[in-house]
Length: 169
Length: 65
Ligand code: FES
Image 1 (spheres, each protein chain N blue to C red):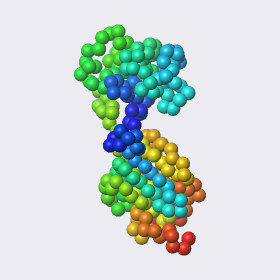
Image 2 (cartoon, each protein chain N blue to C red; image 1 turned 180 degrees about the vertical axis):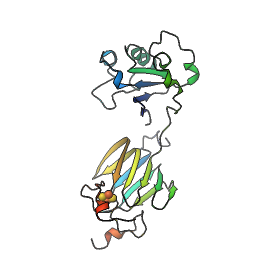
Image 3 (cartoon, chains in turn blue, green; image 1 turned 90 degrees about the horizontal axis):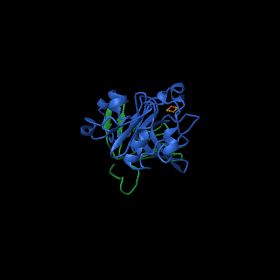
Image 4 (cartoon, each protein chain N blue to C red; image 1 turned 45 degrees about the horizontal axis):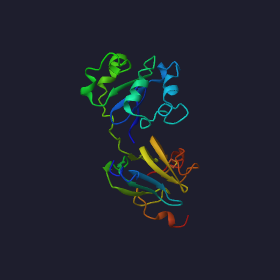
């Protein structure tokens, strides 16, 4: 939980040691990442990066092979980012220094927020288990909007009908 | 997360058939209509629109549909 998040321009993935940043717009599909380490970088899977599937030093090695700044990385311990050696080619310090000031704690878990909207649905935002119709699935870093007026034709989700029936409450 | 060790999800949202929406675990409840914010740990929210105690369920859904 909380180890797969968006940031401006892409997504980031963390284990206890490092954070890997993915910037899809920079990818030229050189395919080093998944040819070298399909366990971690699997384009056919969602999320496509699994930071638990290989040791940190191996992930760093493969991220460093990326010829663009589509994949970059940094230590979670900011002290260690201060003097990384030049051979760590895809460290954010060399490729995307703006990410060094990325203040948000990487292992911070965003709380689930349930909002009761004014005369509208219940909007739930975050990562949680969702039980509906006898099946349970995980909603990850996303949101659902549940009907509160009783009139939706897409139950249990809100489809905007609350406005038509003039729901208040 | 509090419950990580035993692999239980921290927050569970459950749609009760013909009933309310149950939310259990760790979450922040913000009621924008009434301007309140709390961390109740467990709530049952009305989905039928008829509760007299919104946003909570008061079993009104059981009375003549
Ligand atoms: S609350 Fe939006 S359709 Fe019921």
